[in-house]
Length: 190
Length: 190
DNA sequence: CCTCGTCTAGGACGCCCGTCCTACGACGTT
DNA sequence: AACGTCGTAGGACGGGCGTCCTAGACGAGG
Image (cartoon, rainbow over the protein chains, first blue to last red):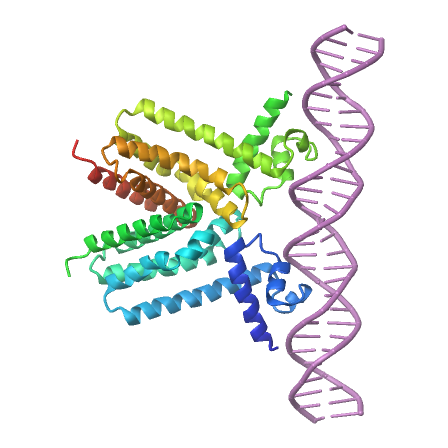
């Protein structure tokens, strides 16, 4: 097996395990078992656990950037793009109920660990924040665009935390609907 | 030192450390050092780490029940009571920026650990949910009272996660103001 | 003064962690 | 056929963890 392919397998497995069990609670042995490799050998690919975290964050950034590009391509209307973001909470409701938001839970954990990589993980949310800001600006809310973007993020994080606790599908749908209505009330009538 | 007093010291120290560092990341040695006791001796007071967690949750429940009783005593108007809840996000902004919401971060962590005590920790948020539900009912929103209560919780959790990441006081104030306006727009004009 | 229950110190136990090292198998190149 | 490189296996290492045990300090009641 080429080193690059193995590396990708490791990152993919670590990504899933960090999400499902948390960063600290996931051991090298766990990742090794998931990939089917011996645990000591990991140092050929990653020199530390932080290096794996770094690769996972980079992979998530790539994936999210892909989402944003797709939304921009598929939706010419900025409001429709924002709606796509709001709806991931509903689309991914099964995972969110089981494990929360992948970005929010990771930043929450790294903040408690006072991990040096907190800010890098935060860039994932910043990616969405900046993209949402731009969409609100295009919608004609230049002044408040960043505040509106943060409000959408606030909604998504709050729903994720409580959906993870109560595992209530109806709650998720209600909040998403409410956010949809908020967005609709915000824009000038189309 | 009497056993009860020592127990309370342990619970108080564990409460703070679980909040600041997280449950799993806090060791018996950490708590022992904070209280000034020897680590092995803990088993005289608590037979397991889960037992300490249980005591911490109970202590937090007591404290929060005290808050609710005080708000009810000081504010005859249900809307003013709800406002008191909304404003704890701002009142406790320093702690929230440093460590997030004590209840939200704990449930998030316990969910990832698949810890058996997740639901007990969840009762802390349920306490607020039910209390807010009752206040909305008193406000005349019996039908939607629980949904409205969940919406307030959603706000508080979302703000806590993002305030913990970005540590931005202005963001907290803006979201709290927005929530205040939401609450004001909700009730029949007083 | 002695005894007994209460509380504590200190460390042993087995386990798992992240890290690091060395030896070996597989394989393309000369 | 021999070599050198790439990727792997497996375990050693030092340390920290939750748990558990035992011996003793202390003080109240006989």
